[in-house]
Length: 277
Image (cartoon, rainbow, N blue to C red):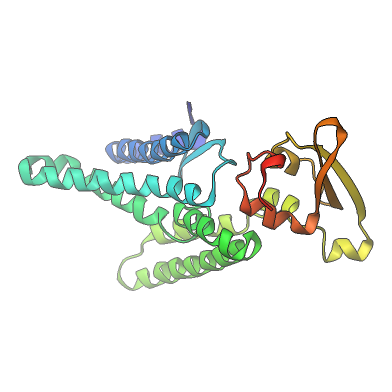
């Protein structure tokens, strides 16, 4: 697994160091990296392949192939990051009882770990709290409604941090609230966050049907995985999927409108011949 530093992250580090906060920057970098490593190890436990961790000024991001995760596994992977941060904070706090002199050197470690854990547990996508909630809701109410619910909670979190930012001027201006609000706003405006899964799971509707869509028959091998088959679908067409076994014999078929139910009922790596319908 590779580690990368975004150029803005390095600039962020130089600025903090010049302002006399070099130690804070190092603690922040260490904590964010450990947070993502916890996600990576959990994903590897579920047979996924993390590829790289990229450090940005607003945090670290883990990239890799995680499409085979079941909803509860997604929730576990997302939860592991904040849990490790909280565990780290508890360990250092416990050490203060044994070695009180460590407090002066490690209070920043505890503060940063608790802050990152608390921030990431907010129920707003793409934070861990939003990912956990999305993973838990998706099998119960479907991806589309789950996305809308998490997005609504993201709006509530955004408004709450904006309110805290303006209220802070009554006492002492706290620009951290504004930074968090900007981050949440950018996430809400990111229309690509769920587009890949939405475009293939849901059959054409609304404006697409107003101009007409082509109905296609897609014949695929029974040895193809559900995920690979999904990548063959096109947003502008309505499909009837025919699953073909050995000797060219048609085993069964299902329509595009059934795809959401089939996709949620089976892990993405399931072979078509093994799917539960």
